[in-house]
Length: 174
Image 1 (spheres, rainbow, N blue to C red):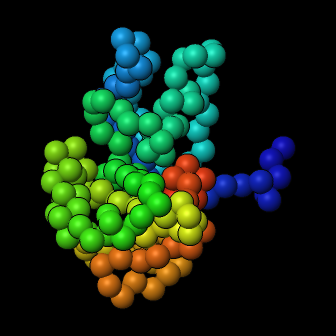
Image 2: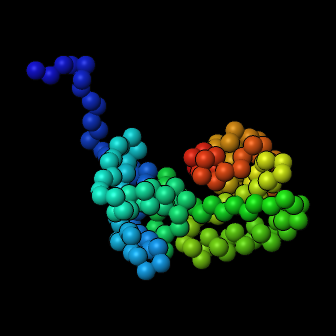
């Protein structure tokens, strides 16, 4: 007998996908670890990825999180195809002096990669902080939502943010 408290609300309309993967391929040298992956995960949906050791489960997750680059196909998260780049330096001023040309390059790299946006973080390893370049309103909104900052110019400093894997990627919100 079903307990009325155990019922679930099931919508007649399925939610839009939050993650969409189309025709993704990933190689490590000659080893073709992910072959033609197609997947949709809807908001609120829970999925399980299972398989034997070495079958590509962790690599798939790392590609979705942009911790690994895939060579073919598309991965879209919340409707936006992103690339995240990190430059680590002891002299961020040298890099930031060229921010106008870097921001122009970000647009070109996004086009070449078929991405909507490239996010560029300049990490000051001595001060232990990141400077995110803000070339447009999309990145401004993402910075404000993701890191709880107010953006007033074409860069924003994020104290304590240094790790792409642990602090940048998990925080991103579109």
